[in-house]
Image (cartoon, rainbow, N blue to C red; front, side, top):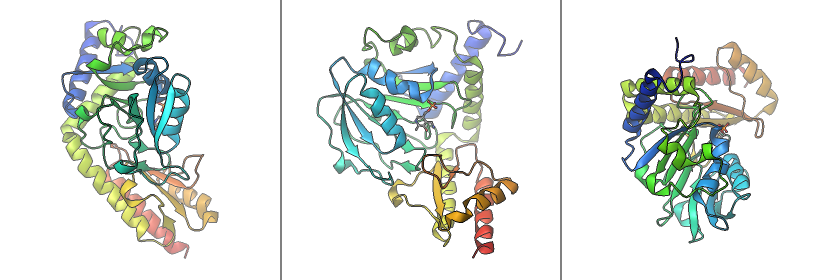
Amino acid sequence: MSVMEISHRTPGFVEVAAQAEADLRELMSIPANYKVLFMQGGASAQFSLVPLNLSPPNSTADYINTGHWSQRGITEARRYCSVHVAADAGGDYRRVPPQQELCFSGHAAYAHYTPNETISGVEFGYVPETGGVPLVADMSSSILSRPIDVAKFGMIYAGAQKNIGPSGLTVVVVREDLLGRARPDTPHVFDYEAIADNQSMLNTPPTFAWYMAGLVFKWLKAAGGVTEMGKRNQAKAAMLYGCIDASGLYRNSVANDARSWMNVTFTLSKPALDSEFLAAAAAAGLKGLKGHRLVGGMRASIYNAMPIEGVEKLCSFMQDFERRHR
Ligand code: PMP
């Protein structure tokens, strides 16, 4: 029987599950006082589960708003607590507020931010200092892309489908002292403490996605871990931004210190060429370059699985396309 057919409670699967956790702990150097949870519902479910689990009724939570996914988190949190926006990089979301612009409430149950905004391609180059308030990070599109110091965070969560494995799995890393704070009306299967106490097997977990995540963790370890990924991702991003900046046709409008290593967005100075660009790129084997439907333009998502050769191909295609459309 395959992993999809066996019960999640059989020793065969329990071993797969435990190994995946051990490998993730090793990759991210997760300290012993943090629990790793393998959950469902995607990162979007966490937008509600974070306030339900971490903020008592009538409390305040601080949020940094740097784009679409931050906003989605804020909208959902407002259903449960009073949201204080500590900084709003509003307008077209092309920058990250520096530490001195962050204005925390001073009495928040937690402070939430989105280290990498996937749609506009805006990434924090630093970890916000919250003065002791637990920092919660939606790392859906940046987890495992470079080394981070987990001890700086109260909680990290990420939908699996970018750098971890197939969709359907959500990874949560939470500091132990934050467990046991869930509101009484939190669904039991979404109570972080109950999940931790039951090795993420309160009910049937997404076994195949968990198994695949374990294979990705092994691949990452063999490739040199997050230190090596960080080097590769930095080189990939530098190459692509370099190509954009050197051209007269393409433009990236994100502030230099906020340019994402994972999602490189750009527009064409002649938008009439957009569809021709996408068709020619697809014909050259370069697919999925259309920007998010909310913002248009182009987006090259160059997650861990994209080799540098893919970025080289994209750059030479872009240069060639520009020569042909002067
Ligand atoms: N947060 C971020 C940063 C994302 O990139 C995404 C998905 N692209 C989400 C949240 C939503 O994730 P999900 O579809 O897993 O709910």
